[in-house]
Image (cartoon, rainbow, N blue to C red; front, side, top):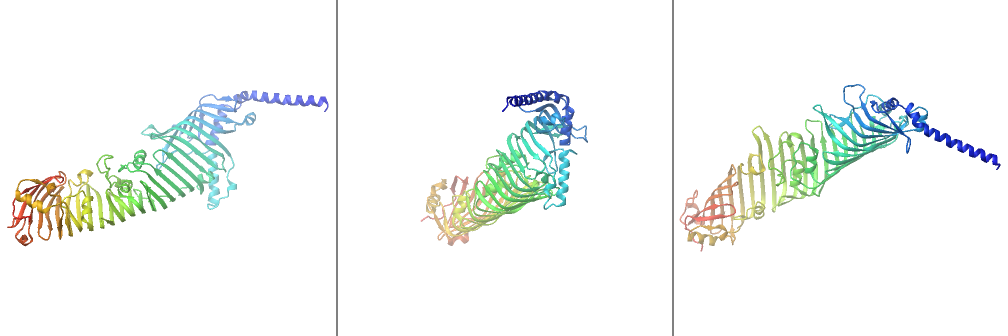
Length: 617
């Protein structure tokens, strides 16, 4: 190769390098004269649809990227000059195209908002969203897409969608505020993340983190057709929300039209429902501090209604399946449906869905019936096995209903204590205060097992029988329900035995006279042919109208009062022989009757003999 050609090539390369160096060196000068502050503000306004103002002078950097650094930037509504800015940022970094800058154009692909403040408004749906711009390229693109969607909602022509580029918007250390009584109230803090949307007709993603009500939260969203979604058409959507109190995810399709629609798989989980209710500030007092709650379901949502099909729910690791329906069209949300469990802790269930369970020492004993003013509930549930405290049940069929100040939990059928159980718990809000009604019917049950579960161990009929309990009273606090209740208790038992009663020893003590504790004669069991109990409850005090147990040789009877609040006893009783039973009326002593007085408390009763008319031989 001739040396002259080599020299010319070297000179050409050198000239190109010099031109590039001069262009790079001239970029700040060109930017400072042609890409001025107003030009950048105009371009940002044209995109966003907001009125953009830049108070500080732009600073241009060439290395490592060509960018403009703006300070004191605001985005405001064009139509309301008196309103505060929708977005305020202490600093905005805009990545610019160097070649476009040489042509006098502003083309940027990435904007970083440093310490922005975003003002939002509460929508009728309860969400906090920023004001919607009245113009701009993004708004016009959505309007164009809306026309494409309306032309063929089922299958819009995606080739007709706008193809304008957008880019990436990053935000760092921001906050979200809302106006309350004329003052800005911070909703989110430490807000950071980015939204990426290369072009209007391409996919988009959003990722953000922040602090909400003292908890770190992370939100991720993505859609393959975001412009169709914003235009009111159906488009794929994935959404996830993560925080320590709860996590939520959705994967399916959605429409953001006036008649919004969602169809997909949703999941929700929380380690403690109590913590979720407190954190969300839902205005519903949590019940007992139950453990984990998780829900996975096929969700179909339309305006005012959400259907949960093939719902898998777990309360305290008790799994169940069913279907739920949420209606938002009435004054209060309405939840209805059916749930079936293999095993179920009824107390956890009631704590999760109703105010019908005590806090168990985890909070105040006051009963919060305001739940009934915030939601209507109608749930049917079944369980192969269930627990209610120490009570074991099987084949449970129950309902939970909350509406218009009335809260009801009914077990219409369940197997327990070898027999059948039916029970009802009702809270009714009335002008004079909340009223509580408790009903229980236990049929063909093992009396010993039933009494043990009820905490009674002395003079309990062991045998098959039926127990009926009806209690009504004010329901201001859990501890006071039984203290103030009115109602009745009745029970009948067939052949069996009276537990912890050595009758010969008992009669021997009565013959000897003097006080003695019932525990002193509890080392035996008395076979009986049957027993019957009837009592009237008034203000927490049981007046025993009839309590009789019949054995082959004796008849034992009791009458008097027993206090629930103080656990005190004031009873009179007697032991008579069957052939003398006719001479004993209303507690009057017959010729062969041992009479006695029972005092003390439920846990430590004592006996005081009155007469010694029956021999224990």
